[in-house]
Image 1 (tube, each protein chain N blue to C red):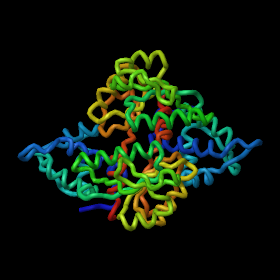
Image 2 (cartoon, chains in turn cyan, orange; image 1 turned 90 degrees about the vertical axis):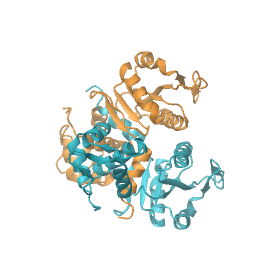
Image 3 (tube, rainbow over the protein chains, first blue to last red; image 1 turned 120 degrees about the vertical axis):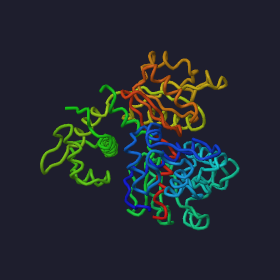
Image 4 (cartoon, rainbow over the protein chains, first blue to last red; image 1 turned 90 degrees about the horizontal axis):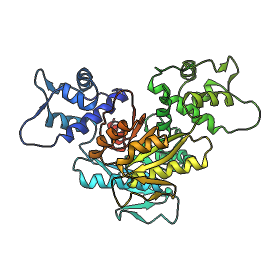
Length: 214
Length: 214
């Protein structure tokens, strides 16, 4: 049922479909949504929705659509959103602290938010030992391997300055991290079995600027 | 020389090439870089580099490569990075303030950083009238159209809560914004002539989580 080789854009849309389905709420009784309706919410056409979902199984019924609760659970399973995923953040500066709090609050508020921030790391001795929102401790960078192992951390968010990011990525990889979301404005190199996603504000802005005057 | 229809992934790589070239510094004299070398830094192969650049013109010489300073200026021109682009931010919460400061600092420090934050907007009366880093004033949402016009704002960053984001996007579009970078965890709908880029932390994490256990 799961395919390893789903294109990245499909995975991105699946994550969006899941969010949209979760936004539909849990009213009692069965509820159906058509590929057209889901597509409209996602900004793609109905054929795309059907094609994306067909990669993973047969979730809908001809002429009826998808049962919302069922499709939601299937997508949660496909995306590993049906279990808690422990994450860490490296770089407890202003951006890192904001991203940390954002995550902590969503995890506390939303029963379906799967990402639990369990550790932060920073080089600054003044920050080490302190806690973010009285919940998540800041550890020194040298603790990365032991914390990844002991806390069962699977994914990391990097919010350190550009010049420190590759070293941090190397430490995370050596410690056994499986996936990285990188906010640092620099291209990172990681082994091919590590998933890397880029969340780079200045690169996004530069991409947008291309379309100005056009 | 400019093509309107370059695929988004190409534009993204151009932005990355530009950053990499800017990272090479300004040592005196002519300096050349091969498509292989540039590709290695960008994490793509040399054929991809040549293909991407060929969409916009002939920038290199066979067997010699690209002259760094020249290619950099050409890319700056293609990406509108050769002029200051005024931007605004809507939602001066924690994430918004962090993103604002990040931008202000880069603009102050880096002579090649083209994005100048000139206004913030928020609904909170306690925030309106205050300044971020003593530089950028926070205005009420109702001021969006007049500030876009008077300050020549071309792009906007949205960091409001999900439920407020579509209304904010509508106000920005009505005010004449050309491009939007959206951090709010919600799918936004804008007219097709408006460029929209998504910087959504939870969606990025959900995408990464797909690859866990695989």
